[in-house]
Image (tube, rainbow, N blue to C red; front, side, top):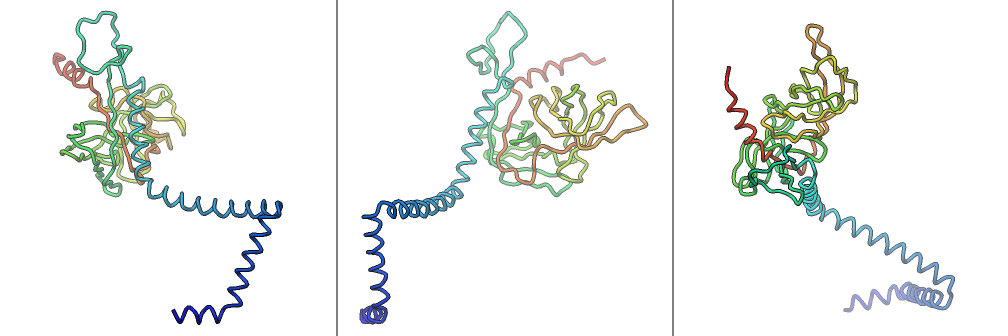
Length: 284
């Protein structure tokens, strides 16, 4: 207490100056409209900047919840896409299918689930991704994995709460893809080099592709997992083969494997029916 009084006594003149200054500013702002408006604007600017900084800090700590909410909303929107349903090409319905149908009678063909990436490699020859969603949440093997901008890979292992994905950046990965222009199909693989690029082989020279052409998943994607028409990437370079009638294309991947946070899993609900039918085809 004694130190406080000594401090006040020592700086009494300075303290008195600030007090009187404050009183003067208050009187000036209260009884002079011009100065009141100016000081009010300054005060609003200061408090606005402070509030903005506070909101920025709060927003940063809320990013995790925001991203998760957006991923959940996107999964719901994908489930409502017309391409997620299939309309049988028949006018006669003999038996009601047990699969989910919408109000127009369309049968759901693809179902989308969102998942958080908890582990991701992209520097190995064979890269894998771990997702925090497993069998208890509806994940099965061979489900396709899609990112916000393009395809990512395929589920190969599932536990109760986690799933393991074979990334496109894996020498064992092979997906059927096609050029958007002309629908020419080929095999999409990774050569083990730059993670930003993939290779599309067995493209007919008659396709006459150009740099910048869009590449999509085809309607004969491996195991019928990937819905057709999903973005794979764009043509970066064309590698001719003088000894065959095919081209090899260097594809810039639409997916940025360096920054994956959330992905979507989907499976063809009618795939098993199609596969069973094809397996019954008589062998020559």
